[in-house]
Length: 346
Image 1 (cartoon, rainbow, N blue to C red):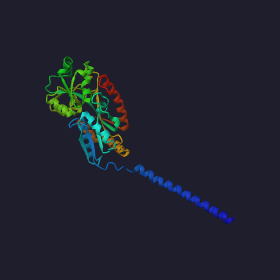
Image 2: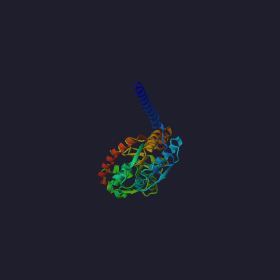
Image 3: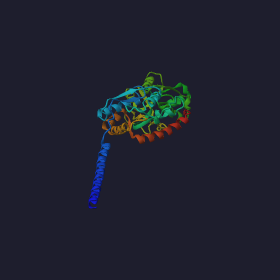
Image 4: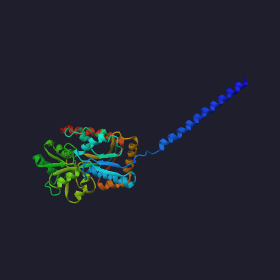
């Protein structure tokens, strides 16, 4: 009996030790595992990255994409080679059709955009079946405003002169922009016209692929007035090539545009904000999304980026992925309402 009892006690003791060892191993094993998962950095990115500007060279998207890649490279925030690719066509709609179907999982191709990604998806004519919901919004970085621009020697000295002429004979004035009918530049151009009680559908609008081409049309005499991004007209204004009749900001802008009145100053109760942000593919990997959220936040806070903003005349406005997505939902409602009022909603 004593022998049996002794063997029983020994077996129980060995079992207790085994269980303790298991528990210890599990506990010890879980610590490195948790530690590794929390501290191990993703290998992304491991190859060159492309940022697409869905327009020709010289416009707001192109300038934004090049500024982002330049600062990310100069600051070392991204070690891999970054290139900018221009993909013009349909005010961004051509690129979106390709991106939303062929690059749905391509973590190495991002793009910049602004309100057209919403407008193109909502408007009736030239409608794009793809919009921001077919992407992963990563961050908003800037906000800009629209500008109504004429040549320096134009007969239109003020916005009032322009509106009076359009009111008398809408077809006598050719309005142009760097996006398709019903898109952002068109809405900026039409906004003061619509608010002045003129039927926007009676005004002739000519579209170009990008603000650079629209500006070339203006300077070449193929358009009387263009609507474009305020930030893209500074050099032309300094060179004495253009006159800016108004900006769509809530208050006057600084720098070279400090003497340009707002629409509200001129008695037109309207404003239009042009944000710019960075997007990735809809099925972007968690690792890539996390990398870009962190990197773009660091970019927005870096002194070199702030210097670039000042140089370009842009206004900083950073929103992270969640905030940006919520903002896009809100603006989608606003733009939808505006397009409906113009009879241009799908």
